[in-house]
Length: 428
Image (cartoon, rainbow, N blue to C red; front, side):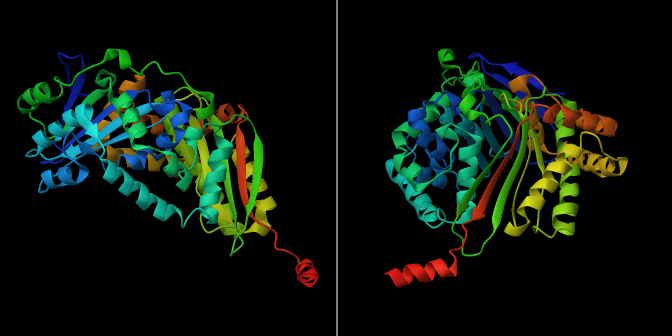
């Protein structure tokens, strides 16, 4: 990793990775295990709104508007993300504006705030957008999908009802709970960094952040309602549509050990399945314009591995499409060719060759590794080169044997027959 580590007087750990990728860029990432899973369900609406609700926040006596003016002319940013089982801060700045980034880090942990006016402005803006979306098939499909896959109200769709129920006070309480134990985080800097310049800034701004060790969230357990519902099932919903079109989600979920090999296999398998689905569902059947299988493996969560696709398609092809997708996915247990594997493997290798020359990738990869102790960034390329067709088949068998194959469908409501409509009109 070739990085320098400091443990500060308040217990916060800092890792510094000097690079020469860009002459005037410094990136910052801080990750911590534990997230909004600990928030009571009575505050679910504020959790759902949280990503947008904190998008325009202030610091101390500075409102969001004041802060924007204060930072005008500088190149500095810092954003926080609070997920179910993880918390993250991501920032970027230049060598000249490094002190401004340090100020933002300190103030976010000690004086995060949102003015009543700015919180209400965000809510009103979102309600204006959603009021035009909530009756659209795309929105209804996403809403039904989340309701089907997750049982927790904290995993549901943002809606005007949710926005009305969320409050500024609850939002601030959640954020303060997420940031109350800064020693949960490991602070990582990467880029054109002079250690002699950074060290006193770290001591001034990070070592002085108050720490409440009793507020740590790192021992958080997985919560069943926040995990995908287990089992194999198809759920079908209908809604009125001006232009009849069906929507489908197909997902395979499971729990696999987090390792470089399994992480790489998740991506490679997604690539192979994407190519198969494009050839069959789009090119041969003409059922949809575009279809892609996304593979992802998370460092946290009980169900940490997923292969999933979501796409619109012609309603009349539903039976054939769902059968074809099922057969394509399950055939991966027994049939994978070198011709399929090679381009998927090369795609992964090409992506990582670009990533390892990016400061944000390094600060992110190092910070993420502190969540579960697995640093895989420098192993991905060699691991991908060694993947075989038997590895892919074994990976798919292990995942599919867990029997978590979920399908969610949104169909257009059946049109009322002309005879029935005329009879009803005559009766009136």
